[in-house]
Amino acid sequence: MTLQNTPQETIIQIVQQQKEFFHSGKTLDLNFRRQQLKALLSAIEKFEKPLADALWTDLHKSYQEAYMTEIGLVKGEIREMLHKVGRWSKRRWKLSPLALFPSQTYLVQEPLGNSLIVAPWNYPVQLLLNPLVGAIGAGCTAMLKPSPYVPHVSAVIEEMISSAFPKEYIAVAQGNRVVNQQLLEQRWDIIFFTGSPALGRQVMQAASKNLTPVVLELGGKSPCIIDSSADIKVVAKRLAWAKTLNAGQTCIAPDYILIHKDVQDEFVKQFAKAVTELHGQDIRQSQHYVRMVTDKAFDRVSSYLKQGTILYGGRTDATERFIEPTLMTDVPLDSALMTEEIFGPIFPMITIDPASGEFLDQVREFVTVREKPLAFYYFGKGSDGWDLIRHTTSGGGCVNDAIMHIANGKVPFGGVGNSGMGHYHGQESFRAFSHQRTIVKTTTLVDLPFRYMPYGLFKLVKKLL
Image (cartoon, rainbow, N blue to C red; front, side, top):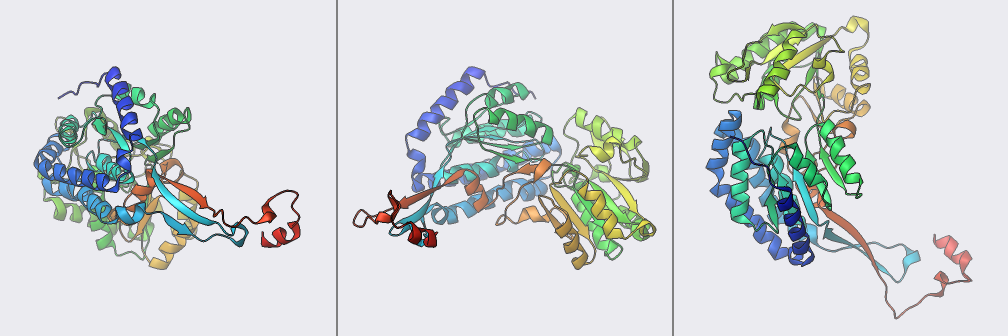
């Protein structure tokens, strides 16, 4: 299935219509926003089966995984927004310094305006619609751009959105990178982009022409630290789940392992056992194991298998775009496997020998000289985990777990440095599409003279300031 590019003239027309719709003031009404959130929730419930079927067709993603990692998360985000958008939208009084007497200070939440939301293919429902929840809640219009690499999902999303909203409010543009470029040539009030750091730079460059604010949810090589104090059986099970979830095609998937030499052999054994427990004797037959999204992705990831020694796994099938979960060692640090985001089920392991220096010191040095990752995972004694967190940085992370920090929709999710900028989820989604406007309200019944030239009360003002 191939999606047709949305014509450029159609894009320009819809952008103009959305500008006019926003300037009509209709989206400012809180009841309107709630109605649209309910309309989105109703549409997702109506299209749940078509969405799940499309996710299976494009990615071999089971219904259970589709619901837990895509559909269910969006529904939860909508319910949270419905419950709290009134509170988040309220004008807030803020304490004023004595120098501003008799004025009062307020924070007003206002929508940024017309938004562009560009989503990737790996979680094509969640990563497109979760930002949309923030746009609707904040009072923005939205142009949605799903990925052409999951055409069945993108087609269902377009049908769903068009059935629930008029194009002058929320619309979908389909197509390849030519369409992306045409969209980025338009003037937006905010661009929300999820994808690779390389494409993120292009988005930021395009946005800079109009000083358009951006939220960039990118990726990178998220390290996984396994210390000698870790419970290896538990570690292996949690990492087998995290690395086989969506076949490793997750922006916060653990990318590579830094492992204490004393526990490496046991980890390899327990990892193999955990994969079998999760997916059966032949993971290729598992209904819960996703395939590579395209032939190009399969070729790229499978080529990494030549860049080291395979300790476990390594089977592939190009006809199915199947790559078995694979542990590797003896991987050169300058190889593509250790310099590019893997975005697949291959797990390179770097052995840390305590004879060469204290384990945590070696880990800290290894991580901090590289780009700031989107996630950071440590397995071992909690106090050591907190010490590493204090001396490193990442978008988010876990101690003795992986992936799960994204599951709490009440806390911010986002990257730092090369892994992105800006946050969303819950109230942060509302804030991402909002502008906090400071307003000072001053009575005309009192007009104190200290603010006026020739500043006769300057000594008093100086003390107040």
